[in-house]
Length: 294
Image 1 (tube, rainbow, N blue to C red):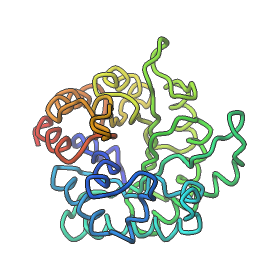
Image 2: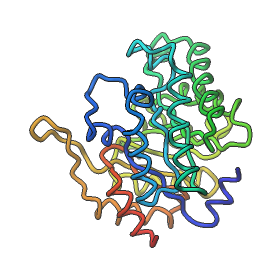
Image 3: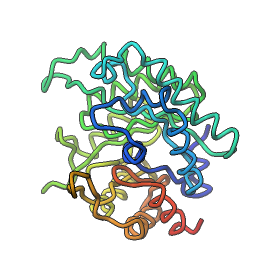
């Protein structure tokens, strides 16, 4: 698929947060989100349907923590293929039935282990874990791979290389989680936008973008910087403001309308794909679709 050609026809709209929607349906902290692909598939499908109905051109599979290394923390490391295939099929089959022409992204997140010098994870084991996950997602029919919320450039590179090796003609997107620092933008591991784009494009990424960590307003100045580094286009998924606790619940302080007003300015700054991350819901995506003139 020529993703850049599709972007040239108009901005593509991603979905919003998966975790917040699972929690609205009873998911408890400490559980395995990917297990819902087989234990409560109707809830996962309902989330995808809500995002498609809100206007999303692309939905992410419920597989963010689906690498075998991450799943091992729930005692499910040997179920990686099963849970990723199940998650991809839920989204793909829904799309085929009800929303033809839309896209499904195989979602991949950090493996939960640190590589040297911060940790002792074996790079070959990390690469194999990502390769297994990406292969399962591709085999189950996703249209592209979306690697999200990366902080460590070494881990992100391993994920991109593993996905690129099995993706065929499918695009491979990767976004880093940048925070605002005195020098501009850096990830928690100190990775600068220039270093991220250079290394990850060389590893096979179609686009390098940004997600999570910061609000829409804080991300606004990063969008044109990443677009320039990518050759003119990037993608961005900010949080719904900053989280805080209310009666034991995590609440985000940005309204759908304010989020949409800010993010709707991103395309003019070079964002070919926009969506939401933590705290965003179908209501935020619907507001963004409206702000984009859908």
